[in-house]
Amino acid sequence: AREAAAAATAAVVEAGGVSLEGVIVDSGRKEVEFELSSLQLEHAKTTKSGWPATDAAALRELAGRPSEDPPVFGSAYGAFGGGEVGEEACRALEALCQMGAIDTMLSNFILPLQDLADGTSRIHCSLNLNTETGRLSS
Image (cartoon, rainbow, N blue to C red; front, side, top):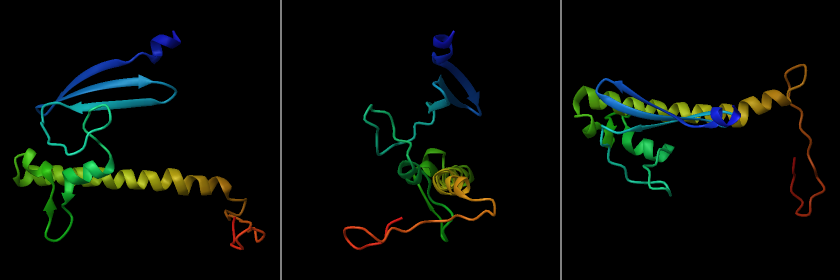
C-alpha cells in the first residue's frame, strides 16, 4: 500500500485554453509539478535534465519589471499576445516571484526565530569572545 501511495499519478486539466499536465509525487510531503504545454513560452535557461528552468531568475525574465514606472515587460508579454492580457501575465509572474521571496523569509528566518523565543517572546543570544581571529561569534 505504501508503494502504491508513493507512485506518481498524472492529471490533465483544461483551464482557459491552456493545457496543464501535472504529476503528483507523494514522498513524505506532496510535490506538484505542472508543465504548461500549449503556451510555447520561450525560455533562456534549462535544468540539467533539459527542462525549462522555473527558478526565480527565470520567472523574473518572463515577468520583467511590470510594477516600475514606466513598466518593463518580460518575454511573457509577447507570448500572451501583448496588451492587457500580456500585462496581467507579467504582473502575475512578478507576484509569484514576490510570494516565493516572502515564503523564503518566513521559512528561513521568521519561523525559526519564533521557535527560539522564550516565554516573553524575546530571543537571547550568546557571544563568544575566545575565537582564534579575535572576532565575535555567536
